[in-house]
Amino acid sequence: MRALRRKRTQRGVAIISALLVVSLAAILVSGMLWRQEVQIRRIENQRLLAQAQWISRSALDWTRLILRSEADTSPTVTYLGGVWGVPIAKTKLSDFLGQIGEVRAQQGASTYLSGSIEDAQAKFNLRNLVSTPTPGVLTVNVEQIQVLQRLFTMLGVNGSLAKTVALQMRAGLQRSATRFQTQAGSSTSTNTTMPSAQAQIQALAQGGGAGSGNFTDDPGLKDADSNAPVAPLQMISVDSLLDVPGFSAEAVAKLRPFITVLPTTSAINMNTAPAEVIAAVVPGMNLSQAQAFVARRETVFFHDVGNVQLALTGAGVKSATTIDPNELDVTTKYFVIHGRVEHERAQLERTTLVYRDPTTHTTRIVYTRDTL
Image (cartoon, rainbow, N blue to C red; front, top):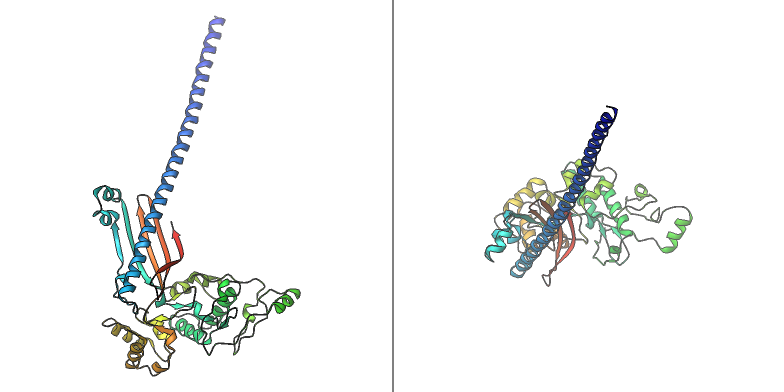
């Protein structure tokens, strides 16, 4: 009896051990299969994302072709009624490839494209706050600061922040290679120059930063507010205003439709600019006059700056004949292209700044920013 009981006990232990081994093997195998499935899905996602990026690149090349062909037909005027101003609604890629062949059309049946082109020179360019009359010399443009003050006040933002933005913009450009550009400066700009190498060494020896206390802005623009030992980053977008003291996320959201940051100084395109920007750029013009100006522009666009000055005079602006023609224009060199690609599970939003050469009409990509 004892031997029989011992055999039954050993048999039960063997069965339990076998069940434990089988369970452990099942757990290990299921874990391996799960990791393999995750790896396969990751590779598929990378493939879909790479395909979406190539589709977006192709759409960008197509958009650049539109900009170039439009400049060939009307090289001196950019207006909202052009082909570039027509947005593309969410459309299947197969609708574009259907004429090529049914095989490619079927491949693009699950891919959707949408996008639009925005005139970057319809907004106030913060780069205009700093002029470069000679290579290596940065000057604060007082006239452009006044324009920004009027725009801030019109949008319900503290107008005194315009001076702070100008100083921040100049401080960021001082550490950038773009300060060596040669741009035509305004005659009313301040006579601020870059500190000499000896002055920088002196400041460092005294324990200060390279940008501390070496500038004299005249009249009434002092560097005391930006006398920090750490140089600020160069502004590359409107969101860079969040690094400027005094700006909140709500204020930046108000300014985003009317302000931009471009690599070089630029004129405002009066054919595409909104009423708020026009009222700020033109001295003595109120918002109601600017809205009437924009309403008139919807029926006929301006062919040159002379037409713009005549329209401003007709709108009741007395200072229309004294406006600097370099600050106004009827054509555009910078465009912002917004594109969205939905390729199966992959979704890609791409924002691209494109420069169109006014002479050759060729386009160059300034930067590209993706949002996944």
